[in-house]
Structures are given as C-alpha cells and as structure tokens.
Image 1 (tube, one colour):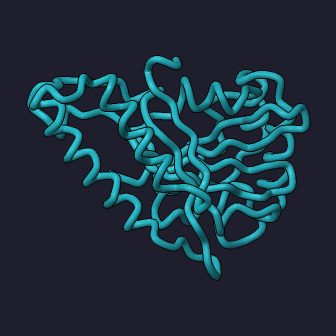
Image 2: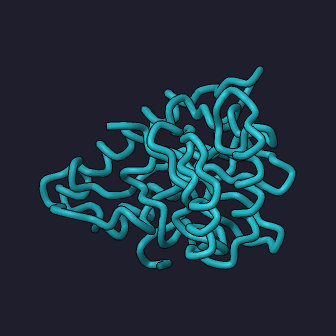
Length: 210
C-alpha cells in the first residue's frame, strides 16, 4: 500500500521540481531525512547523488532531467530521483499534481533545505455517505502543517483522527440534505481553519478554485 508523498524542491529560479516517495509519508520521516547531504533521503551521504540533485535543480525540462539521470546511474533511495515535473510553481503542484486521497503528505524544501511537512486532508465524501458516489481527488482538500518537538511530530495522529471524525459527521449531514457536496467542502475547510489557529499553517484547495 505504501505511504505516498510528494516533495517539492526549490530551484535557483524560484520554481520547483517535484519528486515522489512511496513511503515518505510514514511518520513524516522525510522532514528529518532530507538534508543537504541526503537530498533524496537516506542515512548516508553519497556525493554522486548530491551532484545529480544539483544538476536536476537546473534542468530546463523533463527531457534534460532524463539525460542527467541516464548519465549518472545511482542507487535508489527513499525518494525517486526522476522528477514528476520540472520547473513549476507550488500553486500548480497543489492544484494539478497533489492527490489528496492517495498522497498522505506533501513536503516543501526551500533553497536552504528548510523542510516544511504538510499532512493532506481529502474533502471527498463517497466513503462517508450514501448519496455521493465519487469526487475529485486532485484540487479537493487541505494541507495542514504539523507541530514538532525534539525532531518528532506532535499530535499528528490526533489531527488525522479529528479530521476523519469531521468527515463522518459531514457525510451524515449530506445524506440528510443539510449540505450539498460543495457546501460540505466549504464547511470542512471552515472547521479546519478554526481548529488550526496559530498552531499550524493551512492551505486549502476546493474544486471551485481549480
């Protein structure tokens, strides 16, 4: 099954390359594991990986990225070396590439290797009510940062459980005609915003914004 995650790395041109990790969302491990010495995760420094990473940050297209990877075969790590997309904005990644159902985490790595970890919250309701058969998984959810203490996430499991409980209640309200699916998404976004307050950062995407 995996714990899928997307990782956005800031480039020298202030755009981003996006990479995929099959297990990177587990315990938000990549927030600790991504460093200048281990840009693709892992425990040990590997100079060829670092060189490849720097070259990919300057690649002008996916084709150029493929050429770099073909010229520098390196062992695989926690994060796929081959970028999903090269040179785009964070807004585009969230709106067009991030799957709020299947990606459990989203990481943003700035040029100084400060790593921000976000948990994903999908607004789709087909598993929570009888009257909704399907819903978009891209561009339909929220990203929430997690508090950290001594290198560990604090309250991560609680926050996820809190959102699951919210969806269960909202699903019943949709079944009873209190909310339309669109109104339900807006309500979940409003509740999440009220819960986070000053504790964390919240980024929200709903289908109406896409």
